[in-house]
Image 1 (cartoon, rainbow, N blue to C red):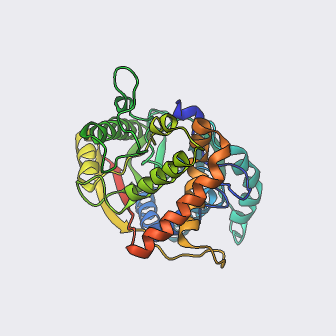
Image 2: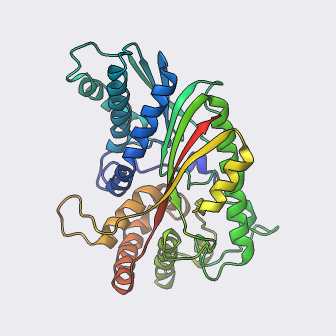
Image 3: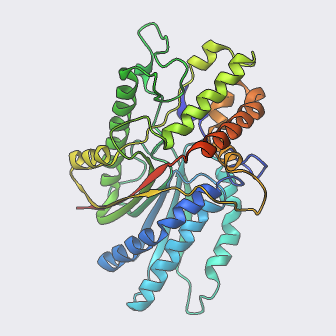
Length: 364
């Protein structure tokens, strides 16, 4: 399966869209917003550029996309006014895979511009915004073009499903699991780790070329606590998805072979694995690396939805494109009903404790 052609968050503003089901990501991003703002302010004070280039990599669509740009814009505006430096123009680049719903972003831009202009009586800086489709695992921009790079909940997605999950006859080695699980042979975790190393090192090299000296990156993505790949964190949600598929197999709705040949292009790295890739790249200084645990108790819309249902709609908005491509759309409702039920059953026994990392990197 060609990830670049098939993978995208569910577009539009419908019931199962990412725009309607990304409040979990927004809440987690808000936890580290102070780190983003602090980093942007420090960057601006250190460089005071006349034109500042900002890229949001893996921007997706929906309200979260423009929310962080607004925060960055206001932080820089506040800082520039404090130091009496009023001539900065903004260049904002929204990047995601070509299948992303960029139209939703573009439709929201006129209203967004109006919002930014409010309360700007002393003049309004020029702001230029555009879409940059393509994989961030490789070059996207010219040399020394960007001052600040932001990426939120995107870098745990790999560029592809690791090819070594299949033997020389194209037979799957990770049967009965969509990700690393208890029954996975050692070669499976090795395949995922090697793919992460290949992708993350390429990401770092590419961004290093595109950043000006002194430029910063803030990267937020899912991870794991220690060396064990199987825990009651992010990997556990994939175990529950595997069990949800197994129920459909037992009911005759999905063929076993079809299930066995489905693997997710995901990897949750440890702190040590992240640090090692940054060290090997060499031109980026890791200024901050913090772990935070994701909340389990939210109900954004005041409804009676269980935690399992909230997680299920969030996972569906992310995984629907890939699952539909492999299995067809017909199984989605029953699959995610199973998923929600299993999450709630597991939460009743013991907490599921997914974690994320936030990294701050500086080009040296």
